[in-house]
Length: 344
Image (tube, rainbow, N blue to C red; front, side, top):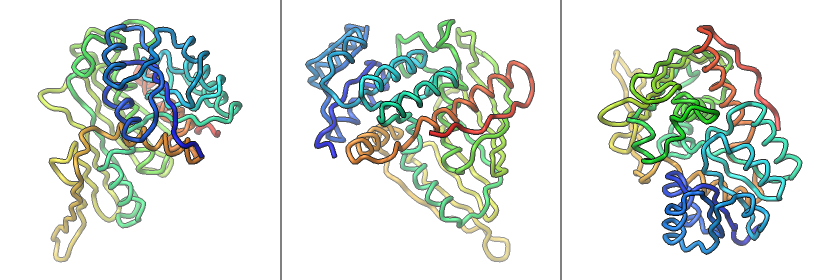
């Protein structure tokens, strides 16, 4: 058991600022080093969190050492290279979603973790949001019976509102995958976890309505899961005026409704007597952010207590397999079979 986890952060963007840095502080970890090519962000966040070691070269940071784990908060095109190098240097890794841009890259990360005997976690943080934890408990209890169908939405005004000045979401090149990878990966992973099923088939429609990108800014996915559950996922970077981030699951004995935020409770609708509807509500406190700190805390706990990864490399790969199948379906206008998940 480690007394205190020492962490280096690669990337000083918005997810590091709002999720990883405060998450590690709350979990009692030591923030040892920070790396980014943006000198202003590096200084601002370094000063805010009193991090003395500040680097612009991540390879130099890894070579210097002095920490136990690395958080990768960079564009997805850098995830695999950084994760593999970190694992090979003997560090545990928490990597942002989506895990990587190809399944081959995901496999390299999984293999590097296996060879190094280090923990690899993919930060699919929606699993850790309070409303989703409640939903998981309800589904796992068996109260609602078999899940027949699910509908999930994640839509907002676009990443430029979340992270002003960051253009990699839209730049032509290897990092450009669009909203199905950015927001779709969240909901695919969430449904995989809630249903405890894998995606087996995918079809997709997508469009670019307003963003200056070659990729999709709005998409609708249809999925079939290994247990027979059907699902639709709507994702968009072009929604106004407010974000929608909800899930509805229709089950054999009732319906589960998971809201966007704590302004509404999680609700369960079941058939009552004489055609009445019985409604159960589960209020939850607003954590101020959608599971970011809880995901980081789970990583810290897993490393320090020598537990299994809360969201394994195989989990991240399975989600990316479904995302890539959706892009195949979109490009070729067909239903795509998703290969069985990798094993770690």
